[in-house]
Image (cartoon, rainbow, N blue to C red; front, side, top):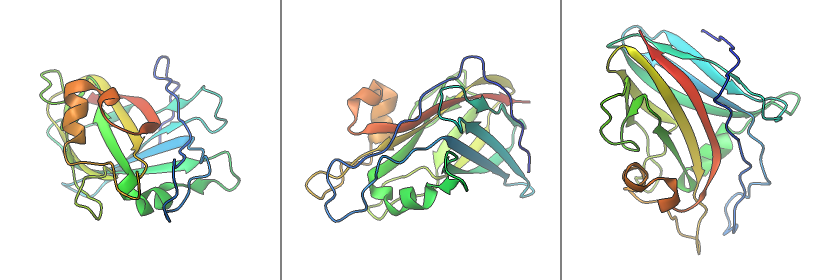
Length: 203
């Protein structure tokens, strides 16, 4: 498993706390801190794993960011984990987020990405496809397929969006990624829990 830490000169984006607006008999986020995003790429060809991390364990706005490096023409299963490394031992927030998957969706955007949240992108080096869904049949984004399209470089942005229930009902819909692609995050409900950008290279 590869873990290469590299200081990021410009990809410093904030991780924000997640808090439910209303409980409605669901678990209540008590302003969870998420300092670390872990991307695990598993090759569909040979099951080998590559791990890339965005980490700000002191939550001071000075993260360490891995450069995602993938092979041209490769296809990968991508899974995500979200951690709070301010705790000792660290706290894995992922199970709680998965338990509330009807209130969350991950979006993949950036200059290097083509997929539901970006639309057609002639400059993309990878293509994203969702590979999971919540109990309502809406995509979540903790499990995905990433296919390398061409050699090159770009940005790979991961956004975890919190979509709190309203009157006990989900505000998620089947076309949220399409809406982001067409009109940006301001056109959908909720707020970002996490938004981080990785440099990505396909070689």
